[in-house]
Length: 194
Picture 1 (cartoon, one colour):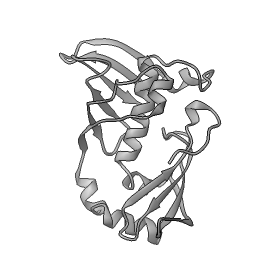
Picture 2 (tube, helix red, strand yellow; picture 1 turned 60 degrees about the vertical axis):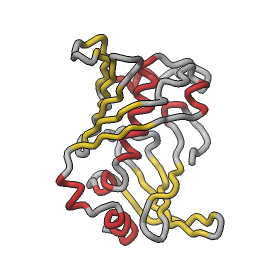
Picture 3 (cartoon, helix red, strand yellow; picture 1 turned 90 degrees about the vertical axis):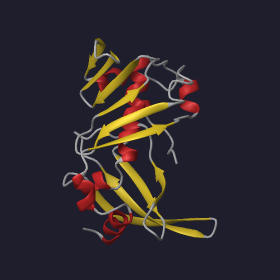
Picture 4 (cartoon, one colour; picture 1 turned 60 degrees about the horizontal axis):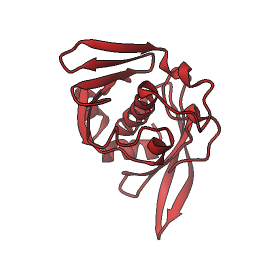
């Protein structure tokens, strides 16, 4: 394992500990300009994210409103009532972005897919970078306000759901994540997001 990746894994609690965990639960407020642009402002202001550590799978609740939740996997999404009754589902949800432009409005599935994909990836870094099909190599460091952060350039395989297939993760001297640079493949060519 590369020195930088090994350091970050140690700083985030060690791979051995991570492999003993099967899931995570986070209460969050997810905001940004994208939600207003896509007509979905406020949907993620107070949510609970429950996810799996080994598989790309998570649930966001409440969503799209009280008494409901959405489940996400790269190949299937659902919206269900909290009592477990399925309201609707979408298979191969990523394909539904194919003809979108930056101005295309999103339905509830589009917004949930986008949020879930980003959240799962962010909440499982750096451990999902240990997968054998994920390529990592150290890049040029980033300098900001007197600090220098080491860069880990990552290339994901096609079968892995990620905001963009190539991303750069920056880690501080202590090995903790400080910045991520990536585009959003679902939005077409776009500038990097930090």
